[in-house]
Amino acid sequence: MEPDVSQILIVADDLDLKHQITQHYVTHHYHVIATNDPMHAIDYLTNETVHLVLFQYHPEATLTALLQDMLEMCAEVPLPPTPGGG
Image 1 (cartoon, rainbow, N blue to C red):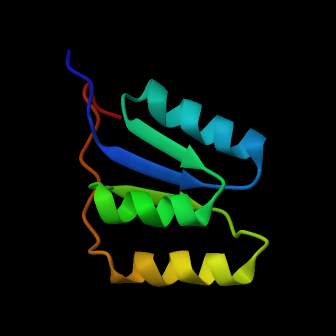
Image 2 (image 1 turned 180 degrees about the vertical axis):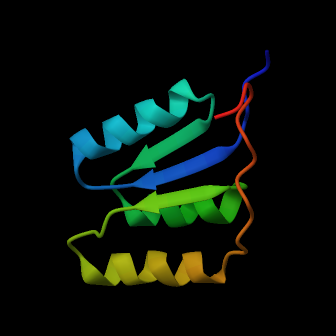
């Protein structure tokens, strides 16, 4: 069975949280990019197709606001089901 190539972007300062979320989605056959840098996330959003973005607030309010503004401009697209259900 081919893995789903849905893109998920995770932005979080908490390394344990980022790791747990990444592992959860990887086991469900999603392609996950995880970063703690909102600027990297913005770069990724402008150059890739992303289906779902999960982010934890960054301590630098300006970067968090910039990322939030970028996300508000993105179209909401339903996440496709994973292979095998679930």
